[in-house]
Amino acid sequence: MAEQNTTGPDTESRIPTVIADELHIVYRVNGAKTGKGSATAALSRILKRGSDDAARGVRKVHAVRGVSFIAYRGEAIGLIGSNGSGKSTLLRAIAGLLPAEKGKVYTDGQPSLLGVNAALMNDLTGERNVILGGLAMGMSREQIRERYEEIVDFSGINEKGDFITLPMRTYSSGMAARLRFSIAAAKDHDVLMIDEALATGDRKFQKRSEARIRELRKEAGTVFLVSHNNKSIRDTCDRVLWLERGELRMDGPTDEVLKEYEKFTGK
Image (cartoon, rainbow, N blue to C red; front, top):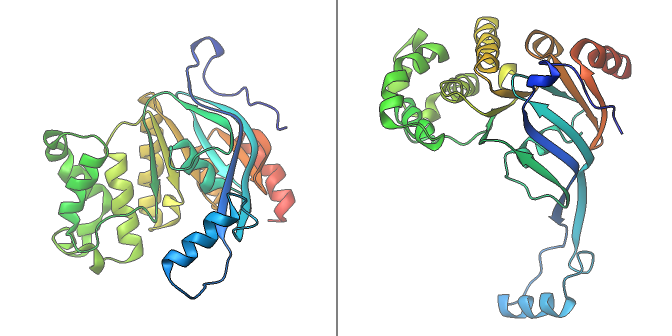
């Protein structure tokens, strides 16, 4: 097991926001071939086979394996690891989007997951998505109106035209990602989880994003950042969780963990 991190705010004032206790997450993937015949006949065959996953042609993927850690208010925590190491799965479990196979996740307040692939409605304008995104995060219409111009300005959507009034389907992937981040960053969060959001956009936007994350930390939130960009992790986070093959390999101060990770990857 990775050694528990002891960095961050003074011990006496530390308030836990997320606790993962021997957390296991298992995906079940239907690996059976498509069969022919009526749906009624297929259902009958399934019921006869019972609940055994192997008998039903279901493959198990053990994505997170016994991960334990405590996150505290005021921390910005980077999540690093090879592709498929379980980083995004862990965030989805913290957000309550995936059930635990074993173990528990405890959160203080409402976790908010922001990902580059987070769903906004492509047929609606950026303006409408700002409103809907704000409402989905629990902001009132008055709060959205007060922060609307700030959200649009922060995203840079309108720097090269009035894109905020156009449907999202006309946006580049980078523009859409910047707008998603800007919507999420407009609200103070108990726990904000960012999945690769800083990998998009130019350096100017990345600097704005990093500055906003630091503001969120000062406002007593906890931030998790998944990124393959070690510089973004160094600039933003004071603590890092390193996952490999679903296991927590190391948990500690950013520089220490990244040094070991860079030895491991050879970068």
